[in-house]
Length: 118
Image (cartoon, rainbow, N blue to C red; front, side, top):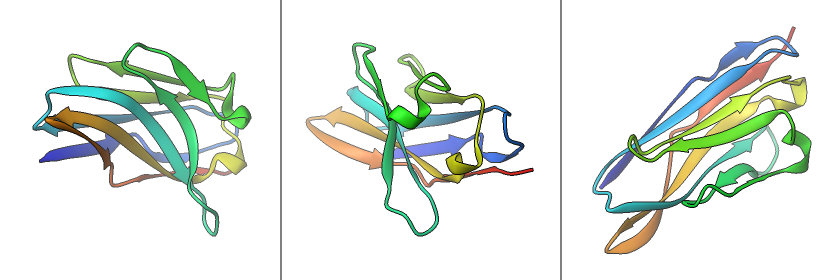
């Protein structure tokens, strides 16, 4: 079994910054992709950013240049640094991790609320 623990959400003013963290623990032989999705109220969940085991990254267009995804292999942790936050970034942010342990499975964090408002 694998557990994901997210942290770092909160309330921030427009233009502010937040850093999200997601730590995986449990039965882990290796990790492939790690990433972040978000879901705003009344909207579908959407991919925000992903980082591969090799360090390649991909972002949705609306966050490029403002958000940075990174990972720490030793800690099985993925981060999302969010700068220049806008009200439209308000959502519940979920991390996901592709864990290898005999087979590959996707695991999801519990979600953390990010609210951008003055």
